[in-house]
Every structure is written in C-alpha cells, then in structure tokens.
Length: 102
Image 1 (cartoon, helix red, strand yellow):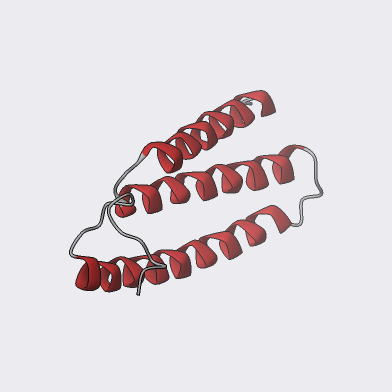
Image 2 (cartoon, rainbow, N blue to C red; image 1 turned 90 degrees about the horizontal axis):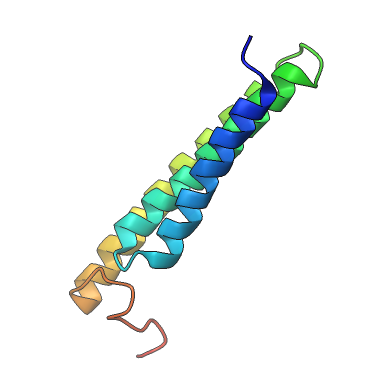
C-alpha cells in the first residue's frame, strides 16, 4: 500500500509547479494550464485524504468530480476570454494588453 505522504508530496509538487506557472507565464493559455495543474493537485488531495483518513463513502471522489466539472467550466470561460481579448488586442500575452483601457 502506498503511504499518504507519497500522494501529498506529489500534490505539493503539482501545486508548486502550477503556482510557478501562473506567476511566470506571459501567455494566457499557459496560465490557464497552470491553473488546471493547481486544481488537479487539489483533486489528488481530496481522493487521497478520503481514502486514508475518511470513511469509505467516496465523498472525496464526489468532490473531485465537482472540481473537474468546475475546472471544465473555467477552461471554457477562460478560452472564450482569450479569444475575445485576442480579437480586441491582437495578442495573448498578459503584459501586452490593458483591460482598463477603453
């Protein structure tokens, strides 16, 4: 049986990579992918803690499915925003456009 620390370590690594990607990416699509990594790290934690510490009712898996549904909606809204911003500003780089400018 794989210990819980293994799953928490993998989740921490994915979370740190996601945070680094959000803070360092200049491309909007790369930042959205980094946010997906952060959400997947949360899913790993939900499932692992439910398996090792919670009752065997599968509540962690249910919450993970909700997070997957929310991340799918976030991806759709994010990509629509990328397309809209590209049509207006002709760039997808975060530091090249200003949304407050009329």
